[in-house]
Length: 309
Ligand code: ING
Image (cartoon, rainbow, N blue to C red; front, side):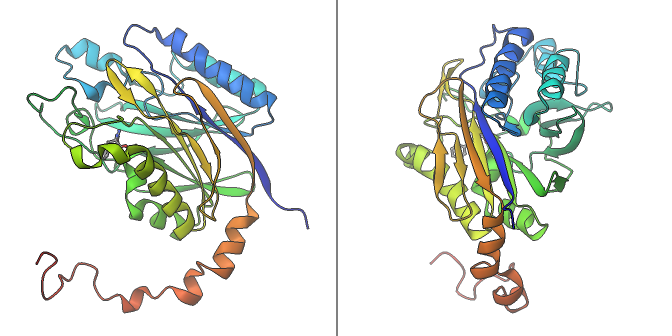
């Protein structure tokens, strides 16, 4: 029996400066897409906020500037060329971008676009880190709670070719529920992008562990849910904020099978065996045979002694 293999690529981006025009940035994405197609990739995963600088890192007090960071449709005139290139190359892709809906709601969104250029699935980021208001004295901000609403689509999955894909975005990858909900819905491959500062002003204790905790989160999620995970960074120093790279392709075993080595535009490609998902779900994380949610009692019941002594 032939194994179900798929060639995937993490298309890591270096910084996208405020000074870059959309066509300039789109040209970088198209170049990565073409390189991925040359390497036989069938699915390319771009980072979170791939089309713009990660603008939650500062207070945008000019409304026109703020609105300029959102896409009102996908494809939009600014992204049409990427969709055309994908259709010509017959490569599917995941694109992270800031979404403005027709009724003026704002989300941190990722879209799955198939090899014909159709948007077949969309996810809106649920775990928004950071703050609603400016943190005085901080060298940079995280104002995602100011610029985005909490995603209202839940964690959905999408059948594509002979597999099932789930999407997540950045901070979602740190939460166990992200992977578990997607796995319970049948996802075999989770695609996510991230913009992660190498050091975060209000998280000083973990700042030496940023790279470790980046991979730890995704490796744990992949292993504990028997899923492939592709995590793609927007890396490098973007508008003064040093962001980590470390884009990866992680197997259901939890092993990192490919990783980025630079902080710039870099393609990380691998052929993955989708049937490894089924083997781990048969032998180790067999939810039906071994998982006992009915015995966990209510997960909201506080411990009688309370969880802080
Ligand atoms: N960025 C960061 C992330 O979750 C962060 C915020 C950094 C949270 C370090 C915790 C620790 O990777 C986004 N955009 O979510």
